[in-house]
Length: 551
Image 1 (cartoon, rainbow, N blue to C red):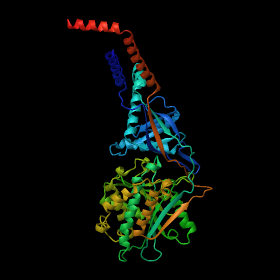
Image 2 (spheres, rainbow, N blue to C red; image 1 turned 135 degrees about the vertical axis):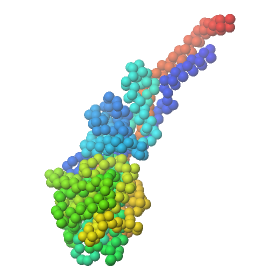
Image 3 (cartoon, rainbow, N blue to C red; image 1 turned 180 degrees about the vertical axis):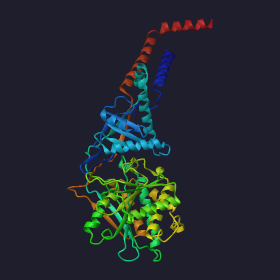
Image 4 (cartoon, one colour; image 1 turned 90 degrees about the horizontal axis):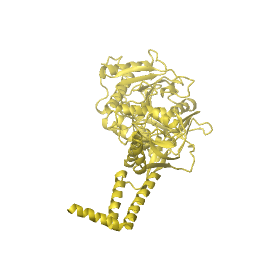
């Protein structure tokens, strides 16, 4: 009797194990950190997601029904169409899994994600959107919900059986009793420093770059190309030109003013306030005097294109026109494979935002232009969580830095009129761009996210700004740090809190599994009961069967 009941138990357990196929416990949980999508108001325009709380079951984006579900996507899955479909079906949330290393993702996939990311951030969303770095547990969840979605094409019997026995339900929980609040007292820091030229009342050339980053989630925005590349080149220009300015024999008759501005990703608010400070409030400023032009550096770490963006075409015989001519000569003589061009975009005074940093100067009638490898100011490459060190081509970053340095030198020393060869190399040896320094600068800049809303609140980000100020003081004179606070009554931009949240993922078996397991137990007990009640009959039949085999 015991032998029969044990055999029945083994058969039932093997059946359950074969159908279940998973060693997961019936109930378990896993906690991780997810980073909420941007939420800010720029003027009267609202951007990003308004929600934070999530209590929903995880589902793949391939599922036909997403209502009140948390949609799980990888970078490869995230498209504008799927994102809008999740919103249309009133999904509870969207969770995007971000790979820790994107070097294995194809270029086309990265560009497609960046494009969808850019479009998503520009929209207002009522459903919470989170981004979380991939790990083993989250990838397991993704594969499970993906497999569950794939069984939708199977027969009804297979779907029901899997739902009853093998399916694992994942509950995503983000709970916070505190409502989302606006962040008060945002500050933007702008740094400036000068290399004084030879003589008095000499023209000033301003070289500037914004140092903040932007992406779908502020806590995951490292901004390597945009605009760590511009900051890196600016700091190298400060270093090598300081050597020329340190000697009276090689000091040109131009002041070089360098500035690193904050708030660049939000309508260049730091640049706007810095210009106002210099033109409207300061008694003396180099911007008051003879400004030859303003050179803005933006996204310069990729591509074989170099575009000069202007608000109005510079007139002949103006400093800006001469600089652009010198730029074309340097490229054609030393880097003929690089495509150069001038992109003219008028400033639309009806629009509340500007496209490039130089437009802030153009609005104050100061001639300026932006150098970038991007032709379109609305390019998705200007703000993405995938803009990391892996997207930087250091050879092209160095090449663009050399082009800018050689062009500046040719312009300031008037080498063309002095008959110097077009392919003359000025910056070499100690004056050359240093590979190790550029790599170190870029690594440092991308070591922490540089989103504007973090720079004046988080210790690591504040340390980064202090380090940039220290770099200025190493090579420049008259270094000033300008801290601009917003008007609380009429702020230019409003950020919101709860940008990083603890998330709990619960793994539970569905209720149907409990019913199935209960049925298996009942069947086992029934077999045992039948065996006990009819032991004599069962024993006689088994004995007869054994004798027939022996004969």
